[in-house]
Image (cartoon, rainbow, N blue to C red; front, side, top):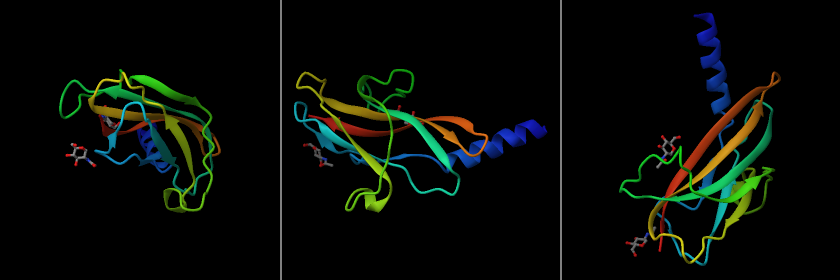
Length: 140
Ligand SMILES: *[C@@H]1O[C@H](CO)[C@@H](O)[C@H](O)[C@H]1NC(C)=O
Ligand SMILES: *[C@@H]1O[C@H](CO)[C@@H](O)[C@H](O)[C@H]1NC(C)=O
């Protein structure tokens, strides 16, 4: 039982490290061929953490609302280092990093899920944490 509580406590503290997709916004229209800037925000947190990396993927949905795509994340537009910095006028001044997803003209039109998987080492242990955040967009 003690072990279970310890794991829950770690999970709760790890959640404080969670990233967020600052943009695009939910429901935003993205024109295939133009692509989209993706701003990934890492809120300030009391616990020290070391980012391993993130990826940016987009999956076309076959249902509305979108089916769960967490086992089938779609096309990879970025995978690599995550080094969020504070930039004036970006992500409300929170540490963030911009990526560009160059969605091709041929990308299927309609609802799609933009996912950002994130790996991070949290705390003094440290504790290894993976998470996936997503936003539903529209490709036109
Ligand atoms: C996206 O486009 C659709 C159809 O053109 C429109 O109804 C909708 O309001 C647009 N959404 C946003 C967030 O601009
Ligand atoms: C988005 O992420 C949430 C939380 O991880 C998950 O429950 C949901 O299924 C995801 N949405 C899609 C469409 O994959």
